[in-house]
Length: 204
Image (cartoon, rainbow, N blue to C red; front, side):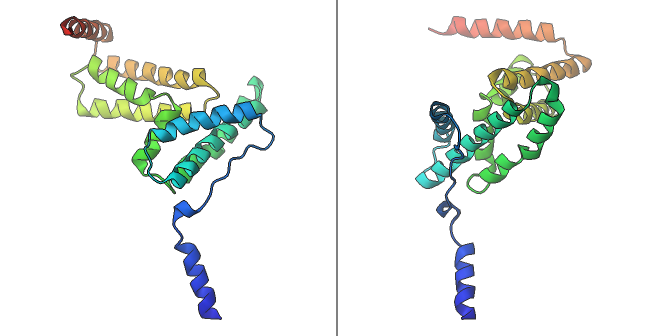
C-alpha cells in the first residue's frame, strides 16, 4: 500500500506543467469587457509563438486574469485612497511573473511585460541610443535599468495614459541624469533629427 501511495505522489509531482489548467476569473464581469481582455491577452500570447496550445491558453488566461485583478483594484479606490491602492497593487505585483514562470522563460516573460506596456521599454531605449550614439556602456545600462523600473510601475497602471505616464516620468529622470553628465540634450536631439531627415532623403 505504501508503495502504491508513494508512486501516486511521485506521479503527481512529475506531471508536466502544461497538464495543469488555468481558469479565467470572470465571475461578475461584463461579457463584452471579458471578451476585449481575452482578445488583448491573446494578441500578447500570439507574439510569443508558443507551439503548445494548452500552454498558450494557460498563459493567455494568466495575463487576462491579471487585467481583471488590476481593474478590480483600481475600481475599488478613489483618488483619496491612493496609498491603500498602491499598497494592494504592490501586494500582488510579483504574482504575474511568478505565475508565468511556470510556463515561460525569462525572455518570454519580458516579452509579456512589453506587450502589456505597449513596447515602450525597447522603443525608448533604442531612441535614446540613436539620439546619443556616444553613450558609454555604463550609461546605456543605467538607462535600461530605469526603463525596466518604469515598466514595472506601468504594468500596474489603470489605463494606457497611466502606463505612458511612468515611462515619461523616467525619461525625465534619465534626461536630467544625462544632462548632469555633460550631455547637451537639445543639441543631441537636433542632430538626431537631422540624421533621420538625411536617412529619409536617401530612401527611394
